[in-house]
Length: 308
Image (cartoon, helix red, strand yellow):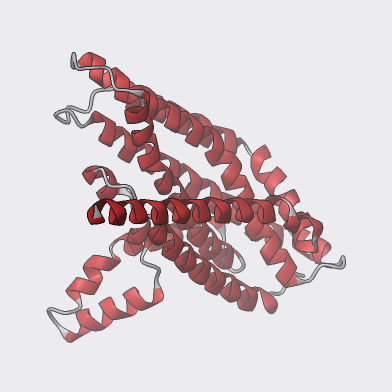
């Protein structure tokens, strides 16, 4: 009886944590799409979002993402019965890459190109300061990423729900119940939030870089940060062994760059583990910290940038 009471208490605590997480996500989107719109930065954000959505690359990335999701659903992975997990892993990677490409592209076209084309100087001649300009661009890109991710996420969730039953029928097994299919869908929902957080960090870095450097350099640097950020755990492990220079370099990179591997859902998908809400909360704090630092760097880099 005591063990049942403990289990019930733990289950109740977990439910409360998920409710808090859901309310936090709702509040974030209300602020992003509602409250912010009534500020000077919100005006810039709205214009930036419209500009990003109108770009051909937006529709191209959305179409490419949807096609890849459909192909991953019906093409066999030869994974010895783990096709659903492979679909989850590939689907999350597809959404992440498409979102990152849009974020970096939009940061370059809406900041670097406007600075080079003297459009930013015209905009800043109005009652808008440079910090509002940077914040507005950043929030506008995040909103564009949401609009890109939304159809892909909905399609992805429906395909995962379908894939669970499809693979069972192909293997001549009992048809899974609705609860079993929803369990698979629930497994990847935290991964969507973690992907958005990772994109938010790299978007902030891209915005900071765009204040000084052109698109191609921006993409190369962001790609390097993405690769090294996912290798941070290995660098931390390597710094305890080998030469002093290797130790120092590993420590420096692990300290300066964000550990993007913390936003990686692959281990959880492979083991069928649901990411706990407390982990999402800590990841959100990490995202807020690194994004805030990157935006502060953008303020510094853009403050004395000659726009004439």
